[in-house]
Length: 231
Image (cartoon, rainbow, N blue to C red; front, side):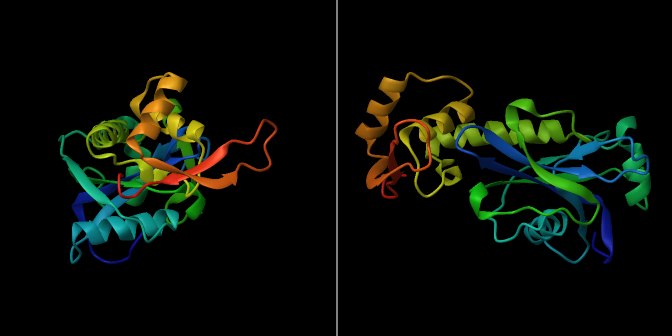
């Protein structure tokens, strides 16, 4: 946590999505609590500093808590419910880390899409640990972070359908099975394998490489790459 003068009423929270070729993930932190028997999970976030902009604050906070940097963070919504930080489950952490734990806090939420293979999160500041959590198994989070995450997921789904945003989650080379799983995990529904592959190839969203999978127990599949002129 920064030692500069912080604004007690404005914070930033970061929803960082990843994809492991099977499931959509979100970056979470485990907050340090005075009672070591308790665990409080949250999105990476913190108060802004008085002399910094919101984008600058989001990048700083994400780096200070998780060690991640060089990520494009997009602001997507603000959350200002008067009671968003007054739940009894959050009091222990607030009293330990906020000089004014009763202050009303409006948070500006950011989201990012990353290739998990390119980043190695490391916990610091008030984060006991930082880890990737399956979206489908998201537990109860601190404050209103479940709502913030839900809104980010809805935004991701809309942008994925309308603007093809989301392919950034794929590794540089992938199979048709991997891209189908990306579609399914973002949209939240199963897709017919044959019809999906015909559609993807017809739209020329991907191009085959001259490589196949290695180190797999099944028949190696052809690897593809994004056709950036289409995506």
